[in-house]
Image (cartoon, rainbow, N blue to C red):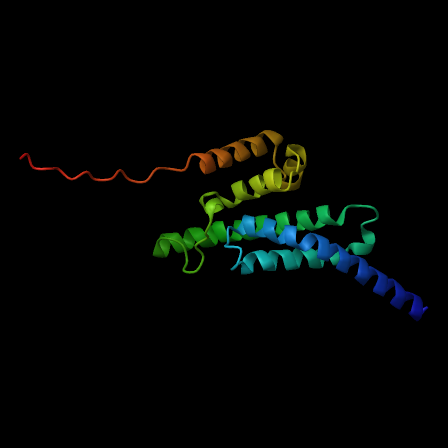
Length: 175
């Protein structure tokens, strides 16, 4: 009996190890896009990935034909959404009202940093991961029309960034 459990545990560990070897790079890139961190300094993205993979491993035996990549991606999205709510929710409002600006060390970088967390989440799921609008809407508990509007707004923000202040042209004295 004990030998059979050990054999099943070893098989489960090998299967999961093979899954992680194939999927972790893409999932880490998705997490890095979500957090808008630089690829070489992405502790939040790595933490998100670790939690998503741990959850996937915990329910590995219950997947029963379900795609483990989909499960891990769902966990990544849900954990990011929860964390973003806390970061950009009440705690952030209190910080800004008291001190102004973002807390030190939380300035995101990259092109996607201009987007809200919800816009990044929808954009990464729809464009990077190729998840259908209906599936994205179901995952985020939003109407399909809202997902479409968020994705459109995010693309507009990325393709047409706000212009900076106009340059001051010095006056030249007449000669």
